[in-house]
Image 1 (cartoon, rainbow over the protein chains, first blue to last red):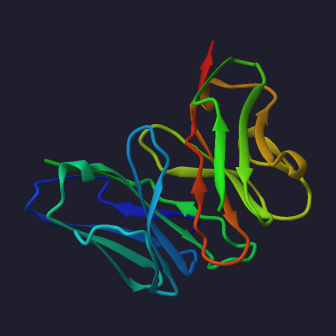
Image 2 (cartoon, one colour; image 1 turned 45 degrees about the vertical axis):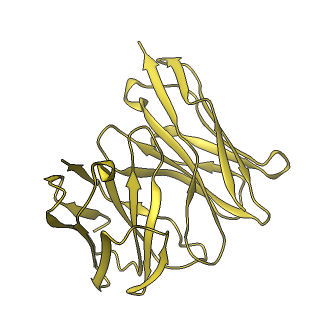
Length: 115
Length: 114
């Protein structure tokens, strides 16, 4: 299995809602990532988990809360979002830190709309 | 600090013509370089990567890229464009070792005309 899966594919939420995005991989990768991508822009890194520990938080607002329950799963919990948070949220995974195995595999993304 | 510059936000070619998408990087140490493609409403798919070794890298779908250290470039080429190549292309760089923080270029939208 060489795939990163993300659910849901689309999500519409109000500013007072709490929702979660889910990402899963079964490639044995030990690093997982969340990216945010606005229209016509490149992906922007939000968080990196390495061996299930948060390694990088790119100064993301606390209304985004990541969680890595195990080496195959990555969640992004959303609460009190703003309309400007509407974007495509991409999950990625890679073998681990550094070395030659740092190719990142991306999921199809979750299209989030905040009303 | 690392950075990536993609020259040309839009490139338009005719079907069957050469595709050339330009990427220049800035890095104080030898980088790892990647080209990703993104089709509408989809995630990113890796086309090819340069880590070490051979400077001419062949990827999927007939694409290739050449790492030129002297020019700090990693341009993407394909001899003959297909309609299905129309997409957004991102060049990205990361440092060898350390955290895998990918730095993306702004992207180039490739249009292919019949």
